[in-house]
Length: 100
Length: 179
Image (cartoon, rainbow over all chains, first blue to last red; front, side, top):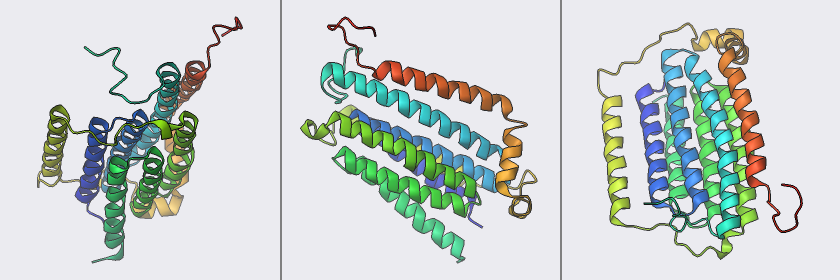
């Protein structure tokens, strides 16, 4: 029996690594990968709760998070592609049109 | 220590290592490969948590579909000409990372506090799932209790596909063609 608190700790660590990546990296594609990492950390948390509570609700939520992640990846990569066509870069420091 | 726990720790360390290499590798292709590895290790952890179907879905959708999409976009953009450094340290960014690590320590404190006791709340024990078949149980719940979210999420997927096509389409303004 794996302690649920250890699963949740791993989930929190993965989420934090994802947050740090979003803050630190400048390549928009790598920022997107770090967002996927955050979503995966959350998924691990859901599965950990489902395992500990012997419930199926966590598994269902994990499915929906997975599908939203897939939709988000598709739209986000299309946006990155369009930005690269217009500006010739994916460096998020140089994409600052809407910055105050 | 029992075998399950040893394997959990091994895969936990491997997945954290994979996540850190996503953060630290300079080339986007290496980052994508490290992320595929992380997804694989996480799917192994899902198997250890009695969720075999979720593990298969994780491998098929994340490692199989989403990461291939990422690699295609990296290939399409030809980022070898991109000379930006992998990591940049400035004061606001350091502050952000410090805050996120602070939140992590808070989360770990809450998770491991004695007040957070998680026990069995439902009937879906590992024995029950073995008896009925976990995929059958998941399908029954998905198409009874969760049928409305299921329908909505399928509409969301269709909208995402149409949106991606429209956003990524090349707009030929000079040729006078449609679109």
